[in-house]
Amino acid sequence: MDITTTIAQTRKYIKEWRSQGLTIGLVPTMGYLHDGHASLIRQARESCQKVVVSIFVNPMQFGANEDLSTYPRDLEADSRLCERLGVDVIFHPEPEEMYAPGFCSFVDMDGLTKELCGRSRPIHFRGVCTVVSKLFNIVTPNKAFFGQKDAQQLAVIRRMVTDLNMDIEIVGCPIVREEDGLARSSRNVYLSPEERQAALVLSKTIALGQRMVQEGVRDSGKLVQTMKEAIAQEPLARIDYVEAVSMDTIQPVETIQGRVLVAMAVFIGKTRLIDNFIVEV
Image 1 (spheres, rainbow, N blue to C red):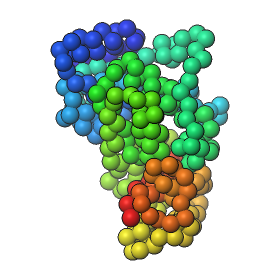
Image 2 (cartoon, helix red, strand yellow):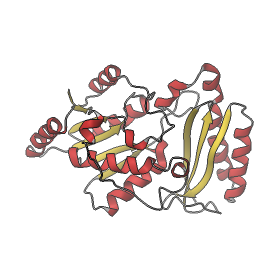
Image 3 (tube, rainbow, N blue to C red):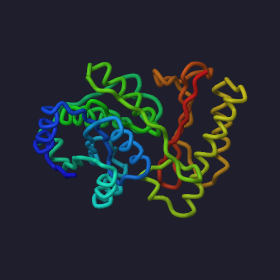
């Protein structure tokens, strides 16, 4: 395994692999890798002949008061995990490598980015679309792997690939959870022991919502209100949003019908966590 820090170094590998007719899988990450990332890497390893993991804390997708400077980083541990899982190249550029002086070209999107996380993080998805487009141009993967925990991001990237005619298969992978149900996240490290226990309210509320749908609840207002009331029972929790939206348009729905994403973002102390489930009725 090699670690590249420049676009030129990375493209040298890509050119060689392409000349040999090898398929390439890309797993874009911001590092501080956990079992959720590992599941993406394993799937990439199983379906592609070469695997690139990008590790880049993208400043463009962080707002002014967000955690860019404190976002957890551990390249040494990330490298050990990647090597153990058979990654061929880690692409780990500095911001200056990705965004040259005078950088002023962006990839933006309407519609899918306005609801859910887009409301409280208005610049977030422009940053995501821009950096992912750049990674796709640099690595030119056959397949790229993303987790369902960031369900809105997954929908946005799929739409971008379709709209811009990118010849890449986007593979969505299931949420990976801790033994007690908490969705794996690099930001879980921010939680104190008391907050870590309080954070279980997210997965418990997700399970509650799933049971309600299984039992026949189709009124999205009733579903969302019951879930909000469950979260409100936890003193350390502060709701950013709980919503039911169409999986295709990310627009709110009144009835649980078709493919519906039920998603939440909740602050536990100062840490913002997300979770969701998808149903098809």
